[in-house]
Length: 160
Ligand code: HEC
Image (cartoon, rainbow, N blue to C red; front, top):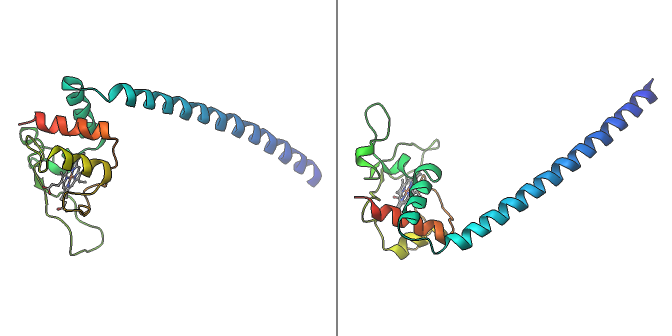
């Protein structure tokens, strides 16, 4: 009896190993495919300029990095105020643990960003601001590709 269930258990295990191997191999293929696609995009996307670059920056800002959730003022109902998009806003979050060093404002980004292109790109690719330090939480420590950072800056400059 005990031996029988041991046998079943072992069979079950080898089946599980087989399934795991197939799954792992499948993931490997997916990752390799995605990597190939993204490196192809990076090379072909690097010289992107004008409308394409602004559209890519808009996508990163609005749908990936979500800059607007902090840098855009809110309406009384809590929705972002699209008429003041990225115009600077009071930080909507409080730290869960008390800290004396929590920013009260997320500054304006739209139109003329608060640093030169080089300063903005350094911030977005290395998380180091123009004063040589990291900005305080909850500003995320972004490590974008240079092409993505350039697209974000092109988009911010395209705003009023
Ligand atoms: C979760 C909230 C949050 C998100 C998301 C966010 N930020 Fe910030 N950001 C802040 C806060 C808060 C500060 C102020 C930090 C400080 O005072 O140390 C800040 C500061 C900055 C500054 C410095 C401005 C200055 O004049 O000092 C820049 C530039 C900036 N953010 C750009 C961005 C961009 C671009 C994105 C999206 C790619 C982004 N931030 C996303 C909260 C956020």
